[in-house]
Image 1 (tube, helix red, strand yellow):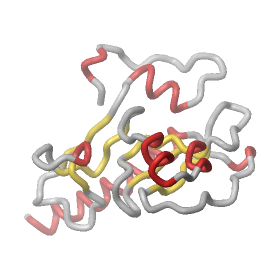
Image 2 (cartoon, one colour; image 1 turned 90 degrees about the vertical axis):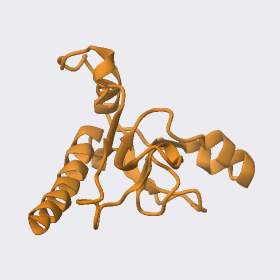
Image 3 (cartoon, helix red, strand yellow; image 1 turned 120 degrees about the vertical axis):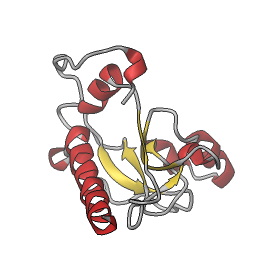
Length: 154
């Protein structure tokens, strides 16, 4: 997790969203998995480039060029998305839907892939969960799958 930033876990700033906190403290996270435990994990090539390893988690603020997709599809609605996890694979990538913001500065997390045609219905501001909660749940699901694969492989 962004260890090169040299930052230790700090308290969130006043009115800082959990995404902004993550960016400030960690920057990025990439989890590369071995083929002994990847069965059932939503893996994809790191950075969408072969030879970089298979990842089940790749989070950063520069992982996908949404402007290029908007230009290619001429779908201006896609400008409302901020892809933070992958972007190239159905059911394995996620984006923030920036059309609605919670009182704490959070955006709804939605599934994303390059074939997206229409944005989902807007999430009401009061129902938006923090990115940190989404990340915790997502990582917990991935760990459960990986641990089960490791147990079966022993």
